[in-house]
Length: 197
Image 1 (cartoon, helix red, strand yellow):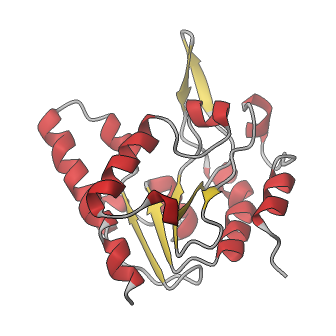
Image 2 (image 1 turned 90 degrees about the vertical axis):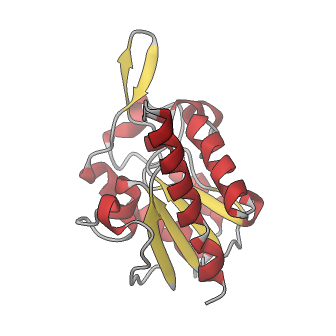
């Protein structure tokens, strides 16, 4: 029998399957509607998420909220999580800057992601960014060429990937940033189409 999200969250807090736990403030498990028909999977918690213990509450989360609103999707109806549950970072000055998780760290966290999916049973899974797409779809998945395309998956009836909002935050050119935001919104609109399948 699948464990409840609360049981999984409690177990995940003690996870030491990879070294990331040692430098993180806490495990950041998923949050949202426990019976959501849609699950968003990001890469890993960021600095604010690590401090608050919740996914997508920092700058990338605020951008995601804007994109979801523009796409007509209510975040309250979603379950949001990450492929990796601890913040991987490097110190630059006084700031803790994001560092991309290694594949072994993604693999170590796979058990938690798969158990979250089993507990929520979403109809649609949206992978946000390359790390999430590799965790949800396959290790050779390329967001740059395959974003917005539905792919076969044993995890849910409808699965696709799009940009991670943090990728948009790193763009310097405003026109490029606006175009990428419109692409993200367009991809997120696929959620409604998938729910009607």
